[in-house]
Image (cartoon, rainbow, N blue to C red; front, side, top):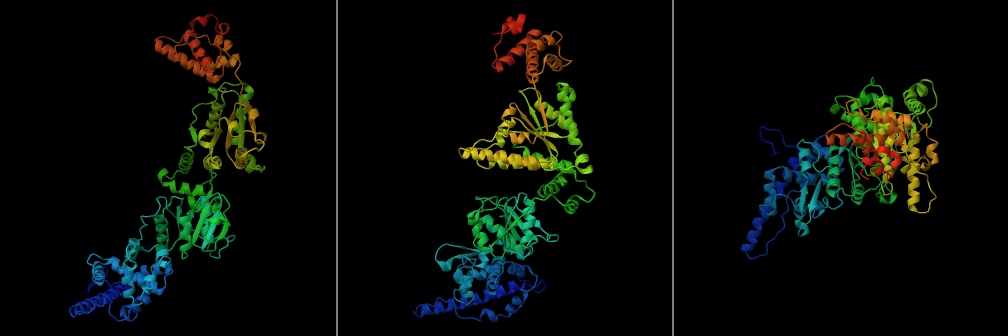
Length: 634
């Protein structure tokens, strides 16, 4: 109970005023009931209206209530935040009183002549304020109380009997509990902004700002500054976001004195447009990469700004991680904030937090390879080995060449390598070895997940990959690169046009990406010339010769394997196989021998080779297998 007593705290002014209103109305109801009973006894038609009482403006508690609206009390704060007029504040006071105190609920039941009715109706509200329907107008469909989602009306039965529902969050706030509204989206966030250092932003205080840009946190920052606000409720909305969720956001912002930032992707739902149009007491920021169409915006005035995807300044970096923390990762402003949030769970390890950030965003689109093999695990000609080592050197020396010596890094300091050649010749292995030398992981793109038949989805997936890769040092490995980097064609239909757009987008991202990209293809001739011009290193992988094949056979028959009977020189001379095929054949031979309970013989090795040749669709010729041909099940 909020009424207080002789020894307890004094009741808030809004409660004292609301209680006096209800007491006066209850007394009138008693008088009216007695008069109606007398009329009935006398055989006259009863007068069902409440008799005239002292006008609510003459109540002693009203002066204190009006004076309290200029204070910093919870009630006065909500009234100011919702931009309520004095009559609307009076209605809020009586609604809150009836909602918060059980004795006052009994008064409401007495007024309405219904023991089960603890909430006011529109008709009763009009009687209480002796203004006819003027009291009820404070709860009209476009009233401030409803546009601020503080109260609603249950539409059932005759209009005068519609029950008024004050949201419980208002009552909690009035008694001092500002816990987040339970109806808020699960991923709701809060943004606090400073306008310091934002001289280039229009700070005229717009009520509705539309901000575009690729960095979500920069959009929040710039949008908040343009709206001249410091605290915002932030939530991502979709066409599936319900009316109740939008109402919860508006109510939360109203009660706590915040604005609202909605991440709306590229489309603003109709429900959201309606709430933005109604809740004019709030500062709104609509944040999207490219912005919703003008036709989807509310009709109220709005201001458009663009948030450039500038990297964190030294001051922003120092504020996030401390002035002594070196900038070893090229984080965007958004990524910096994500890493900051996850630092505690990673024990304060920035590197671990960045890796977790990158892995989480890439796990659906790529396969992570943690390098375990080194230079001794690959057998290539000397010139190809030199080319691979040169890639490592170039990546390692980028800081010296670009930063210390002052060479231009235009358009970026990234490194793009193209590995071409038949399957199984070591392209993936080489990328793993290079990554291992550099202390990086390899993220191999899953083209089936990246490439989408839906317009624009492929670009979104690629943007997610490049953004995550930019944060954490890693090797991006595009296998079957010709599928993504294929030659642009003459536009004959919409499919051609959007395929060309995808290629153009990739070109742009490669130009601005500062990391290491390895593209592997079996068909270099199918790669677009524009990509080839952006290649810093090209390594052509070929099928190994007899000497290399013999070395690969020996490498794939480990010392612990009982394979003394295998003539690797003969196998290398007879069969022109790739390194990957030799590995598969040797493993097949090992399983064959293990199943037969013996050692790895030439018979097992030859059958392993035959198995691989069959998979490739090649004929098994007697002249290739010689004396071992009879061992095959042809």
